[in-house]
Image (cartoon, helix red, strand yellow):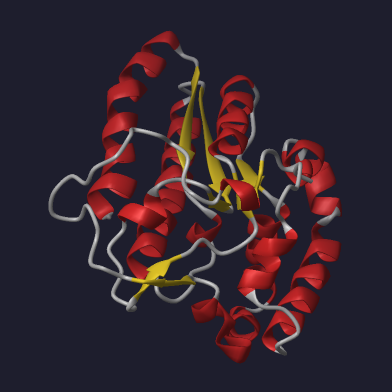
Length: 243
């Protein structure tokens, strides 16, 4: 997990940075996660690696700014993405893992990366859900612990109704078609209205912050009270065109 999600990006930065320094321009885009600013249970190694990416980019940004190299740094922080990860990752829960909704297609992240490559932005959150996690964490980490833990939702929402047969690619490659998309396409949004409206525009994003934090708290309370379950949420998203 550390070698791929963290060190893979470290090596990429080390390869690109000398060229960008020499030309005195360029943008380095790293992909972290909404879970890079707020961890959840059952994904501690993943969260640790993605949080390290945030720290790496913050430090590198300040160093290059002081050096006057002209190199920009943007961190992409997506929500859950419909990739084959959830079929190839090992599971120790007795059930196959599931992405925490809402789920987005990989193209939504690709669009954010393309935008970041040509415009100066510090962070881009792909989906309101990722931004809400960040805002709740800033408001109160202890409160966020409690909200996520209500009714065991942080655990329930990451488990499918499918027994685990030990399939994974942890120690050797697994059979794959090479697709970047997973099996949650019917639940996934093709684009993020939040990102297009607020995420690409920092001033608007800060203005919407308080409202997003309140909405996130209310949703977590509703799910924790048992009024909503993951499978019901997925069914509600079938056929959705995307917000």
